[in-house]
Image 1 (cartoon, rainbow, N blue to C red):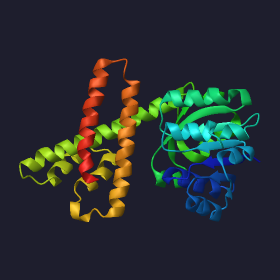
Image 2 (cartoon, rainbow, N blue to C red):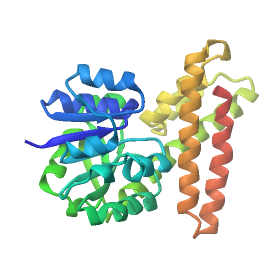
Image 3 (tube, rainbow, N blue to C red):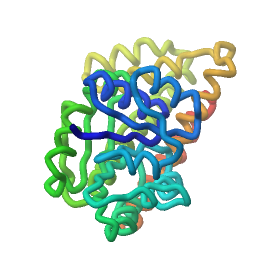
Image 4 (cartoon, one colour):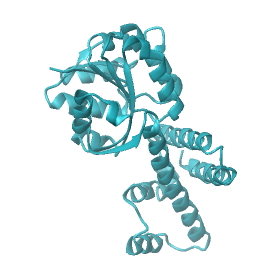
Length: 280
């Protein structure tokens, strides 16, 4: 029986862990927030005291933390996976980070017999709970059978980018498409509102012409939400979402530095994205 580990029980990590546990799998978990660990334990997980302890008890460890420095701390920090590493351990990094973060993690633990792959995820927590995520994978052909089988538990669409690190690049591209649509929707709303025109007609036109994607349609509800209805809890959530958008746009700028035209386009996107921050 394969023993699984999960480090990082935020919105996506908790949902993915919940689905994995629902299959009857053995899962050891760690997060800095004891409350999220307690929820996972109530669902059948075993709590660990550190990423190193998770690694010691697992054949495959999933990592889903916010940013590159968190990935580095989880993999090579004082209580990181490297200190619980054993030959044959597989680490799947689900975080949206620069491809270099993935390859650096891979190189740091290679001598310990540990394999690292990027398995970026998309679809949201509901898809994660249902095992219906889209997975963008770097190094798929190098994965062992147990790790590939885990991908089929997590999601229904596995997309191979190529070598290790390429899945992370695909995820950044996917996210930029989402943020570009959101920024365009925000600009379009402002244009229409400036002429005292109801935005309902604009939305109907988008739907009729096929311009409105599912994620953008979900976002429109926020654009139409009056400021007085944004309470402290929602504001905190929006600030977190906005922060992730800024992070991912910066990652895209780093990837696009070889092309001045692309850099200029991404800088324009970053400026447009910042206009959405009125919601937070």
